Image (cartoon, rainbow, N blue to C red; front, side):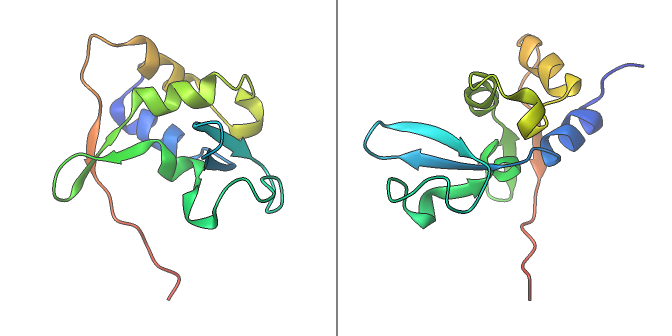
Length: 109
């Protein structure tokens, strides 16, 4: 079965965990529970992993960032954060441009 951009986007949406930016080390870190970061990471720097890999590219569009996916892959915890084969294929296919999509963040209210 061929890997399509739709499958890649679905795989990105299934990423688990949270990503935060550690200002002391200047690196992004992954956590799996609400208290895993302690005091090193401000609450406004913590994003769900599925949102972390999307970067604003134009007025209403976002790009699926290979750089940010690579940050997650470098943690070597693929199973825990649910990195699947479509995202690995996307990372290997640098000959094609990053996926750009219209994205809307849904609010709880």
